[in-house]
Length: 194
Image 1 (tube, rainbow, N blue to C red):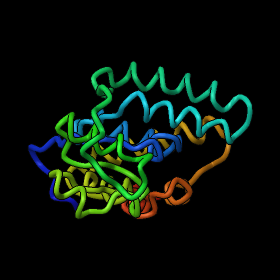
Image 2 (cartoon, one colour):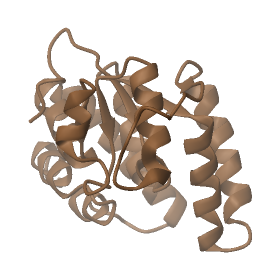
Image 3 (cartoon, rainbow, N blue to C red):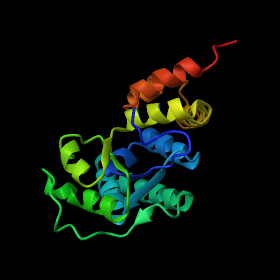
Image 4 (tube, rainbow, N blue to C red):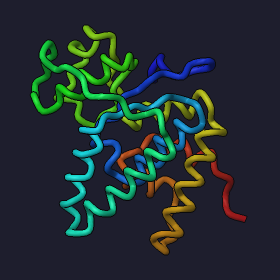
């Protein structure tokens, strides 16, 4: 569990493109942010990476992603931060340096990413940042505010059922979204059928 999340805390967390592109993961993260458990930040470049990554799902993927980006920015109007000077920063993958530079410039407490190897904890610690995987972050948020996170999970589950026409179960949906520990926590918090 991260020490960044807890009562009376609202850490500023920079979200990497890889946690914004998957719909369920993004919706849970943003729902938890809207509940006041952390303040998300991203850059124009991160949003552009998301839109370009969406091309992989088909010709309409980028168009859909750009619509989702516009909706996200309307929901979280203060989340986008300006680009930053990257010259003094280093990461194993030079393509990720902009994330680190923007996180430092915008006084973030951590970076939320699935890409652990390219964001070494020791390099981030030198800048006063913590690397957080989305599942671990969301479990910590659930421990800090179980009712709020449960409500977000239920809303995302309901929307997944509505959009897909499939009767998703919480643990299975969260596992598919690469949030297995959160799925277990939310599944345990759900009342049984009947």
